Amino acid sequence: MAKSDTHYFYVLECKDGTYYGGYTTDVARREAEHNAGIRCKYTRNRRPVRVIHSECFETRSEATKAEAAFKKLLRKDKDLYLQKNKGGDMR
Image 1: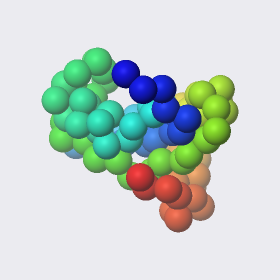
Image 2: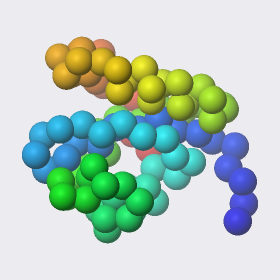
Image 3: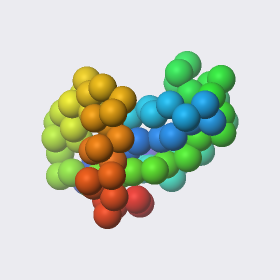
């Protein structure tokens, strides 16, 4: 398995309207895994999910810090963050 030099913080919107923030090196693969019910209890019963935001980072540390910061936000602040960063990578 090749090591990726690209690290992503991504946000999913679940069927029930909730958000899930995560880290990956491959956003498309990870979205497919979530929709298949693989490796994430939170999204398993909230499928289908779709990627609504992604940001690219040079290091895993930077991406996981962005993920942790997002997860600490209140819902209204998550909405503002996503609105403000609407032009994000999105794969």
